[in-house]
Length: 572
Image 1 (cartoon, rainbow, N blue to C red):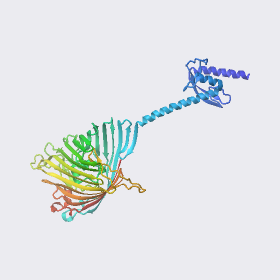
Image 2: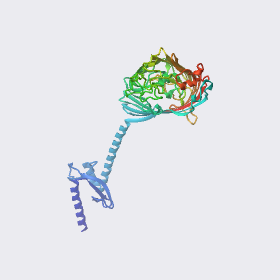
Image 3: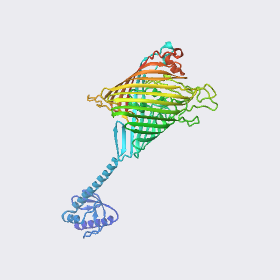
Image 4: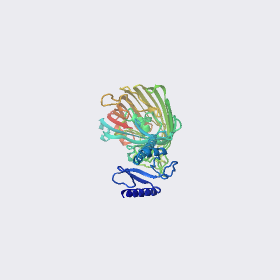
């Protein structure tokens, strides 16, 4: 009776199995004790896998419908051998193990393909920033940034009341963030590159004024490239160098006055050609990005840069620089020379009735002015100022109107191992109604020496200073102390010429620089004004530094202004 019951149950299961397997896949279970096969889970039953009917006909005496693992169909020989020597349960377990091995191989293959895809994009970090690029070199992107906390302490800061000056003319001690920049740059299709950088400390919060570089460049060859967007004017050796690589904390007075203050970042097109020993750059540019502010430009005072409200046309300029190393042993021993020149058109804004836009406001309206501060990094109050070079109505026969200015520069730089010497001469000619060969001039020179044996680095594309890499970076265990540099320089500017009374000043600087790592730099400067003469200047603030009209032949207490400055530069 029991045998009949088991036979009936097995027959029913096989019939159901045949019917079901022709329609869909079926889960099978084997009893670990009796080795019987079941279509449903139960106590002591182990899941063997999911099986479906094979449509492939066999050439042997095997049944028409054979249950096989979907991942791998066993051969006729394998089925025959296992039928002769193995119980049914063992055969199914073996098949399941083979299927799992094949599945694992497939998964490994998929992972290998994914790894190859990931390897197409790789990233790294070095002294130039964070980089990501495709393996074929077609695309790349980098993040860069810098922060420069600064301090200023004026230890001699005494305007002499005998000359009419007051404490209102004192410079302030304090701290600030001199620069805080963040940017991205990269390449696409190998021959194109781009850069965008924003300085959160620029522009007094006006929209757009914090933008510095924002351009796209086409690299025609390794040496020749073309640029479109916002970028630096190709003018001056010290201006061509990044502020991260300056020997002193601030640029010299003539560079600040004739290049930086009119805003060296202007919008336009340019071309650059640079090889190891020779560089040249030319540009055709207009006004800088964003609204005017004291931190963005001195051109078109109280106007609005990129004026699109009908208040006047923008000014244009053509400018260029040629530099090179006629004598060069290697990158640590060379002599660099260069010249710069540029013509800038200035649009003085007049109304239809002949009056000047913004007339009566501080600084007037339209036109432009040049100003200078004494190499300080926190309180950069102007101690020299030409005032607006456009004054009076169009109908006034005695009016002055600046229509353009021309700039010229000559530069030299000598490097011999740890010793270096650098100097520049700059001149700005003022053109327009009421002017006759008026010109502003300035020059500087300094020497520096690396106590730890490093040498000034050279940036080929810019033709200027580059990043210093210490021979022995700083380490707490005393194995390295970084690079140490000392410097001494002289700085002079004269903005008195003809009818222009902008003032005159000269000063000396002492510098100590510590480079613990290539991306970290600490600077300490002492500046001392030898003479400040602002007698007769048209602006009240600047006039106070030399005692006003009653002190025509005197400086501000014989130049009694000295300050101690510090600045950290951390960049990537």
